[in-house]
Image 1 (cartoon, rainbow, N blue to C red):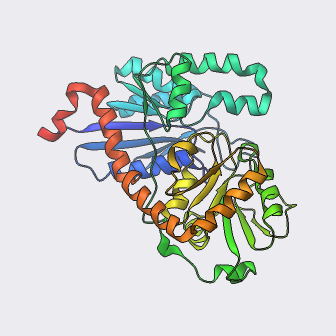
Image 2 (cartoon, rainbow, N blue to C red):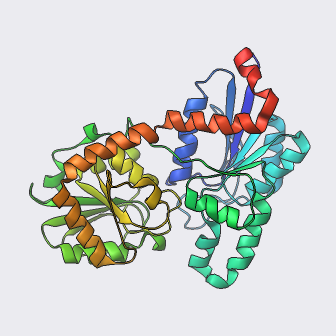
Image 3 (cartoon, rainbow, N blue to C red):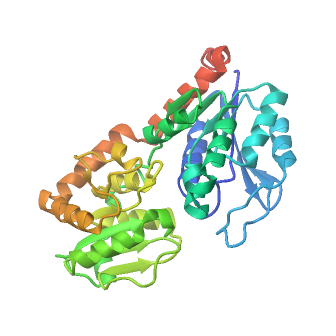
Length: 373
């Protein structure tokens, strides 16, 4: 049987990393079970190694980087790709590994797909100011203009790339693990652990406490909601000074623990206005709880009125009103609808099948040989 070898390469892979690692792990598991496909994953590590198709390539650890490593030398990544000789390469970040993949593209004469997971101009401007935005946009336009196809997780991200002059841009949503994030993960003891009664509405936010998550909006919202509502903040770099109706779990939690907390809450709240996809929203919906988020970023694409409510960004009053409205509508019924919505549209198996369509398109006549054996 003819085997198509697909290689993913990224630096966005660490013990505490989020959506990109979730996507790559889900893809690696599913492609590994499909006949006629070999999948390799290249990620940064302390030394060169391989296990079950996952290759670690030496890269120094970032100080205070929570396990992230930043590649500084192009050659080790290019050399691993040359040794593997994949038929197609997918790039998961806009840094050195992307240029290594383009080097391998020229040497191996294989197509390269770029997945634009994060909004680089916005990330840089958040940290350095808008004065750097034109240079970063020019860099993104140049880099992604070299790929045979560019995937974006949402229409808003695709539109940004097209606005920068990037060609061959396609929307490819991510998925959610419907077995892990499931209403059956509900824990009846969680409220007792938090010291709240059965009549208190339990809200949750899970993620990093970074600036773009707008956590001060959530905290201000909770002050306005009062003691009949309680918020559980879960993740690293969370604030320590919070209202009395907020509990902070300031640590990276395993996925199973996040799933338990989500399924045991009544709703997820999210004030971030720069989300490129919002995987945590899908995880909440898969857990059988509705969502209150802001009408910004990709949330407008994935949160329907059957799954939750959207409110004005950066407005604690609007968010508090939306939370009250959600519970007046019946959060349990909305949660059941949210679960059905993600089952229909965001199962990982369907996402991987869609990805294979993109791979088929750029590989052209090579691909049918799989089916023909």
